[in-house]
Image (tube, rainbow, N blue to C red; front, top):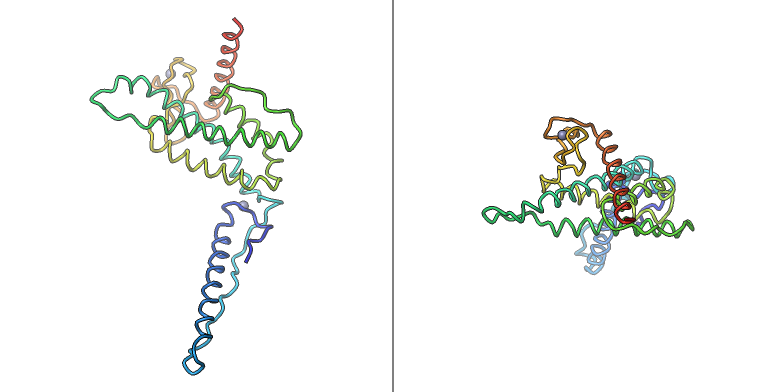
Length: 252
Ligand SMILES: [Zn+2]
Ligand SMILES: [Zn+2]
């Protein structure tokens, strides 16, 4: 039984898809049971195997691909990808000196895995950007040096285009990919407590010693507290400054 093409491919229809798969399995089992039953001589036959019932699990219709709930989930996950990636990258940077100093041979977290994963996320994101630019006849992606800033710019661009992208048939793979990456990066940042560190400089003491707390606030060792919006604004401004400085260095 095919999955209804009008159903949203997101998490909202997980139960529906499970029910369809279970039904398909039951149909196969019924076919096998019928063959066995037919092969028996008439007198030895028990009751004829009952065919499975059609699943009655309702599904959410996508409009036209995703329903509004899943669209919101994907938007949130995409924005979160950049935040989590930035935290993971900051963790790698923060460890670099410590790993070299390495007291009593303590094994540093596997930074190569983090770096490779962030590279993979970036590859996933720019591929979508490139495909969408091509599909829409936009100019090709401007060259940007690989790194945190390029990733943030790409995510920002995709968020800007997201409503249109999600109306497109090709967005099924993209949307599910974003959700998968969200799970993967979340798991990674949980297993590395240092990734709670934010890459920003504290707006009060200018030190890079700001960490994310469990309640969603960011706190500097100097005591300065930032809510998420303040933190993100600070992050964006500092990324711009950084970019600007890079350009000045390049020009001189
Ligand atoms: Zn959905
Ligand atoms: Zn501070």
